[in-house]
Image (tube, rainbow, N blue to C red):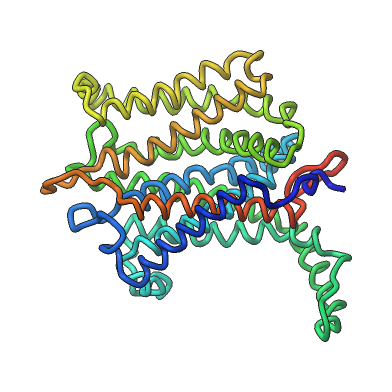
Length: 400
């Protein structure tokens, strides 16, 4: 029996996730039928909130593991890291899918989303248009990159029910053709995925560059796109480590420290570059003076940088701590949490409309939908792992 089937799919924890996912879907139904005003605290001054800050901005950042691990393993030919590529690819595929769904849910007229795909209707000069287009194309690339996994799962095992059994031969042949084709062109899609990811990860920062009167000076900067891109590089690898530990614990598999510890050696360098970009920019603009104010924004900035950047970088500089599963997991969790807090700071905590009378506080339904989406994503990840050969098994060699 494969290790990924060594535990049952439904456990008490899975039951809790199912309940949370059901609650989130109920809120989604209410939002679709009765509108944003019925379930959110959004208004004309705060047109976006938790759903954009977490479901979209944070979700896209944490899905960066797909392109970072693919770059390391395939572009840089570090094939010793192949074991983490497929799980990271799956996380990216699901993460971007839910980010797209999050955008649709947050749109007032979600039923007009098809306008985006009709030439002449969208504003081609908009930074948001560039983000949306790159995300759509990259999501397509992710699903294409996952095709070899599907082919590996079903090739030689096709047995359609009933009258559909007459198509078994055709389906087998199609799987063979797709598998051979992907083997020849997969590198093109990997490179395309890296380029598209770099484009839209940075462009998410561009969205807030055009809001200097609404974003707190601690975060507003003309180099915000660069900071978003640098943080995506770091959190992509950290997320791959973080999810590997969680999957191993949930599925009762041995921790892949032999693979993850060497990968983590580059994280202190990436975090240092990201930290330097933030500090140099802050020094140039003189915004460090705001740190003495001790407002919720300054405390959140200090937590984002201190706990999410400086502390994990220091921990991962020590060889002994990198080889320790507990410390390696803790450091990667800090990085993931730090970048997630950064996106939340930029899009929610540090955002204040000039004429708003009160601050935005997410409603209970908003929180339920976000928690429900995260729970549903985790459930789908678990289902994919049980169905497809995503996780590396001893003696296996994945090349896509």
